[in-house]
Length: 581
Image (cartoon, rainbow, N blue to C red; front, top):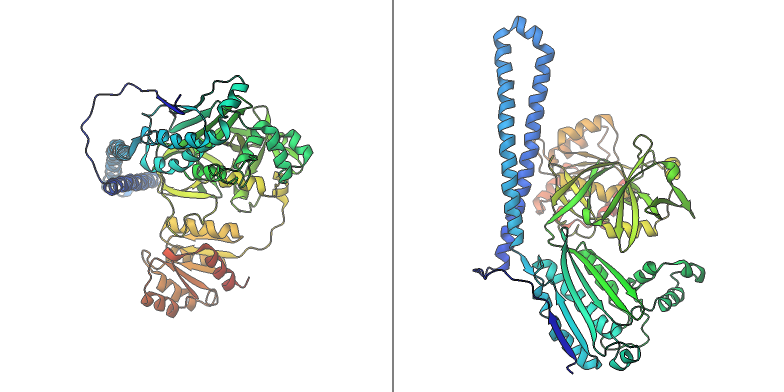
């Protein structure tokens, strides 16, 4: 009998279609342009909102003065009233156009993204050749069953899955399926079965790799966990099967007594998990001793569009990817219990940890966790069969957003955030990295809501960020606030001067290119004022010429940072140095 048998379940395929080969770079350019169209549409919507507000304000003003205007200036009143009426009609007409435009742009963007979609069979086709060599080397008999090859994924997601899938197959062959003689003794067929199945679930694709082998040895995992110091013996006996199974994703964790060329030396499953998290996906393992193991991967169809729940925390919009959410909670202080100082709340017959997102992000709330009529609002996150309740200031809405990764060097440097998105009102939303939030919630010293409310606070260094780019303002604030600074934002020089009139600051971070007064002129103005002449100024700009740097220093700036070369550590070090910390 052949060592490897392949069975592919064929779905009924549609009639052959005409195809055209196109360079990937051209497709990417088209997708980027369609993404820009979506962002332009959002900006247009924001401007329409402002237009409506002007019309509303004008109408309100007219109402408060209508008696006097009708009496003293009847013709003028008629003209103004007519103009307001025309503004309303114009807004209504344009609103209908915007709805139509939104539909067309969204459809264009979706179709552009779909051009990058490939059937997962492209990946499946590699597996028989890969397994043929493995089975020959290990002397095992395996039947490979492939299902759902017509399910489609973004080409980028498909490429990223190649390595993790190969590792999981290798594990199934090397550690899962037993040798023919051993299977015979257990009353199993000599030929083991590995099944790979793909199917859509919401806006994700699920890929299951299952085998009918020996399964994971949970008792051996328990012993190894104690040996490596994950738990003491008492704790280990209390751990559930799901908690023990998750330990195989810890770096260097292996229960295998036989190290082979194929299996490596206990390295790999942590890399698989990291790769899945990078894609915004998840991985779950289910096992039964001597019956087999199923590894279930969940990944998004595409990385360009994400469905999220938008929330507000400390005046910033944060987006939770919807595939990471399991539910919502509205709870009182009395419903929160503590175990060894860690706050817990009941959710579906289990006690799960609860925390405030502001604390996780490093913000020190002024009055503890935010309450609404005596209740906390929390989103329940799900990751690797674990749950975490995260309290937010406000839940705004569910929305589909176009994701944008941070440019280098901010990519990966802004903790707990994986990217940004432009929202309908024109503001920037930050997309949360759920996996980092889980890790932080597990490792940090937990505080109860009461402890947060009464925690002592030292005087904070006050920073004013002046930049007409909303993204730059938010990125700088998200670097500074977790480091303990109190940050205010201004979008131009005149707004900055208004804030300075009302409050004292310890340092100013100033952009150069702004409407009205530019950063050079603002710096000169600050250095000319007795109140602010001794306050350090750092110019943070996209301009990188020596001439611009010289002009900044001559204007009185103590530092000059080029945005494209901003390194978070050195940025914070400069701030500390200039404020004398």
